[in-house]
Image 1: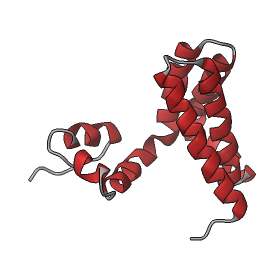
Image 2 (image 1 turned 30 degrees about the horizontal axis):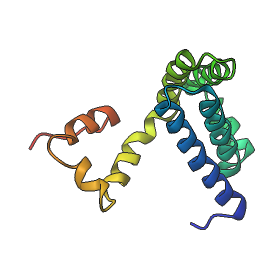
Image 3 (image 1 turned 90 degrees about the vertical axis):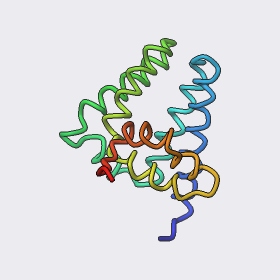
Length: 138
């Protein structure tokens, strides 16, 4: 699947948003970095999947609680309540994007350096439990 130029910019904005978000958490919930990460992530999502699909994704009946938590968390971060906003936003992210974590973990396990670490017998059960991957016992 080939991406258009606008979608490539969207992927870049989403990646930059995730980097700023992680930096905001690593700097003890710096509200400016968290807010910048949120703005870049949402703008990149609009560019990547389009205006209509983004609105449809966030307005699905099963995802409305996640959307409210995500938006309220961003609002709290913007009004300088970063820890509370992060916790509420994280709950929203889990509700909105929780279905994708198993796909993300499967992809990360196929990467050369990260894959063996995530597949190690000490880490794999915890990652599988967090991602919601169900594995039958051997």
